[in-house]
Image (tube, rainbow, N blue to C red):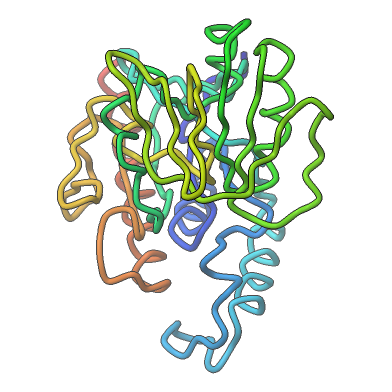
Amino acid sequence: MSDRYDIAIVGSGPAGLSAAINAKIRNKDIIVFGSRDFSAKLIKAPKINNYLGFYNVTGEKLKEEFENHIKAMDISIKYERINAVYAIGDYFVLMVNEKMYEATSIILATGVEYTKPLKGEEEFLGKGVGYCATCDAPLYKGKTVAIVGYNDDAEEDTNFVNELASKTYYIPMYNGNYKLKDNIEIIKDKPIEIKGDMFVNKLLLKNCTIETDGVFILKDSVPPGQLVPGLEIEDGHIKTDRNMNTNIPGCFAAGDCVGKPYQYIKSAGEGQIASLSAVSYIDSLKNSRK
């Protein structure tokens, strides 16, 4: 168990990093969860002309400038994937596999997921479909499990699940060397639909069907509506007001995850607003306790 942070920031794109530097300037104790590339969308950008002060730069160059900025401010990033966030009274618990972190407030800057959910994914969520393989692995001891992995981080989780499951299938959505145990069956195919009765019993792929007791879908991030129970979603995005408040007190959101336009400078601005709102929220809590 870590100490309780003032602000936990989930996401390391322009919104998350902007939130981090503004919270750090205001002497708040923060923790940032993200990836080494900061944002997959950012590093793939061939040219950026609408980010004030940076004309005709590549996404890689802008990422380098972001990195220099946070290093200068002694801000580090936890390369851990948040699987669930729970509001517990006046603080939040963030779950990372077998670990958890506490924070007085959270800022969601998770970006937007461009892959649509599989047919049956939402229907069977909690009924054989899950997003945290290591959390739920004990439920599948001696059973068959299929894991759809969108990046190589999923391989470690797959190896762990395989220690408990009787049979493990791995369906990679990327090309790689696949550092998996020998008894894990790799199927290079496209998942189409998750089927079942009361619970999952099949995963339909383009060219075959797998009989399975569970399906884990391991992407870069959990969809916000599943990440934070009770979070209000509108038109596929987190619903916020102008101060980036969500419907949950102490929970703020910024960037692509709150809606269009999907622009880096817009995300950075919203990250600043979310940070200032979180700071105000924390200070008001402290004053109310005096």
